[in-house]
Structures are given as C-alpha cells and as structure tokens.
Image 1 (cartoon, rainbow, N blue to C red):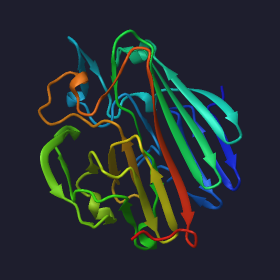
Image 2 (image 1 turned 90 degrees about the vertical axis):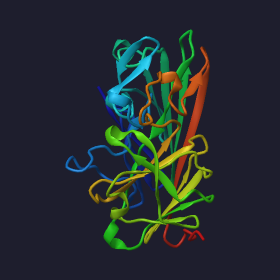
Image 3 (image 1 turned 180 degrees about the vertical axis):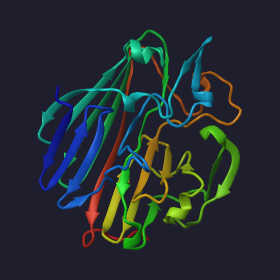
Length: 293
C-alpha cells in the first residue's frame, strides 16, 4: 500500500503521508520550509487537527449522557487517510467515520483535505461534511512547524491588524484559564526568541488578523487563514522551528463541565451540510520579500 505522495510545481516539491494526511516536507528550490521533526523535541511536522483543537478536560468530551475519550487535538493525526492524487501539483485526502472514530466521536463525518502546490506557495482546503441526521459539532485546524534557525539572525512575526498584547494563561492539563499575561507586541510586530515560549504557547484567540507573516534573515512566509479565528504560536525546548497553528475552535476552559456542543468556538454543522476552511502559505525569499512596517 502506497502511503507517501509527492507533488511538484516549478522548483517546489512537497511530500505527504497518508498517515494523518500530513505534509512531511515542503521545499522551494534548495530551501526546506518545514522542519524535519525530532523525536526528542516534537516528532510531528504538520499535523491535522480534528474534531478538536487543544486539550479536552480530563481527556474526555461529553455528548448528551455519554463521555468519550478524546486525545489532544483530536484523532485525525493518528489515522490513515485515503489518498487521491489529482495531478502533479494537487492531492486529496479523505477520512470517514468508522467504528474506531465513533468510539471517540459519535458522528457520521467526512473530512477531506485538498493540498495544492504552487511554485512558491502551498494551499490547503479542508472540507467537513455531516453525513448523519443530527447537528455535528466540530473544530478543525492545522499545526505546521516551520524551519527556523534561531542563530541565523532576528526573526519576527507580523500581524496584518493590531491585536491585543496579551494571551490567556494555560492552566494545568492544557486548559485555558481566565487569567491573561502580557505579550511583547510592538505595534503589529512580535519579536521572536525561544525564551518567548519557555512557559507555554502564545494563544491569540479571536484575532482581528486573518493574515500574518513570519519574517527572518532569508525571507518571509506569508500566511493567509481567512476561515480560522484563532492563531497559536508554539515552540518546544528551543527547537529549530516555529509552529504557526490555525484553529477554528479552542481547548476547554478551566472549570468547564459542559457538553461538547457548548465548548467555545465549536462549529455546529447541520445534517447533510458541508463547510470549507482555507489556509495558504506563500514563501518570498530574501530579495523578493518586502519587510513589513
């Protein structure tokens, strides 16, 4: 069974795995834009998040009168998708409800990801379909780790709009607390360093921005996420990457005891309906990239 797939567009190349429908490598020319993974730090590269983003209280969700185990960020990253190559630059992955998924999430869903590679960009379109007869709550997200050499020079993250210079404090168990802590934003610019993530991820919830830029000595990565209201920036142990996570929903709040339907930011999809979410990453190397103000 083939479980690895390759796309080409000009000087760009991308590799994907059917396991989790994960992009495992994205290269433009000689530059690898995704980090390569490290089991001692973080073994994943660009996992898909579904049907939750973030942590669930006590590792479970409650639906009606039953509880179901739910891993952090859901179960999609651990399952094998069906792959359908469309042409040399596009690929479609699908995952459908079965006995295994119903033990965690009792809904008749279909999750599809369409990847499209361009000479200097990678686009992802999620399509979530409710094939059941009842409303289906869900959250979806993408968690790519972009290669970053901290020693090569200054790096910064630039928001398209002004954002609040504070983020929630993460409580034990990965839950969101009501407390907030300051973030050293300078206008729309956040200077990056490993120390910024020493305590926890920076979770910018309900952002005004829907586009961002990760800028460094060798160029700029432009991120457009029009359908994702939450942005999470994360690094572990000073590893050579920055995770730029796009979420439609969030983890449970501290003290939350409600049902999965009541979880913050959940999308409630009507029976028979489908919904799409898009994100696009575009690389501009040094010389082409224009620094943001």
